[in-house]
Image (cartoon, rainbow, N blue to C red; front, top):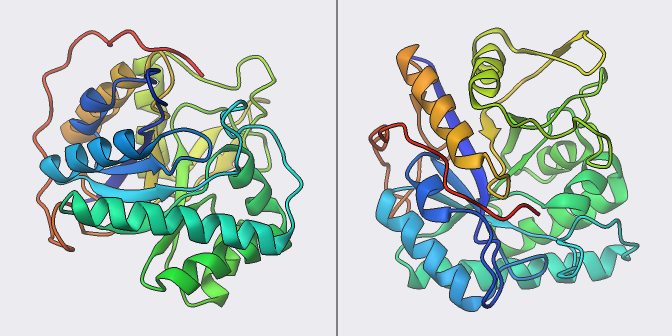
Length: 279
């Protein structure tokens, strides 16, 4: 049976402000990229999200970012390699301790927003991020675009490099993501997105914005948790993949507890999407 991981960016509220429906998403996905406090999240939200993930057997990843609460981590920032290394170490330390208290553990790292885009393209930034991960815990996997500088750096440092595709983002013909500033860069229709993911998983291709076919290699598929249609899209994806005998499970094989192997969680009953606040 084919197996694929579904991941989502979660824990992205801050203080009194909420972002997305984390509980509903955690009932669908198998891996949670949890904000570490730099672009979103705070200690209370981090702990609550880790606990909710542990209860459902969802694997926990550290969603590290630039220090950019005002811009939700989506503004490009000029950071020296040493400063970036320290920032990632700091965030991993916080998330590692939080996950442990919640009864689970961090098993992978996925950068967020502008840091993700920069580190995937810039070998200097990629090296700084991966060096920090390796210094903290060389058993952690790195989740990013295939054939990216970030995954190449992970391989150089002996870390597991995991390729991901994006369910709800448009692709350029070269396999990169269309800029969020471009109309149509974020997809919203649940059934169309589900069919798109099915092609990614079974055929390894997706249709780019110019109509061409782009190769997509994925061990994990991301559905952004801050989209207004996130829950509906995630449910549609899981329902369609399950109908096609494609299992949903963490790519790390670890969910609740200290590395326990978890069985796939039950498929939730399809329902209306919960109202959410967009980024």
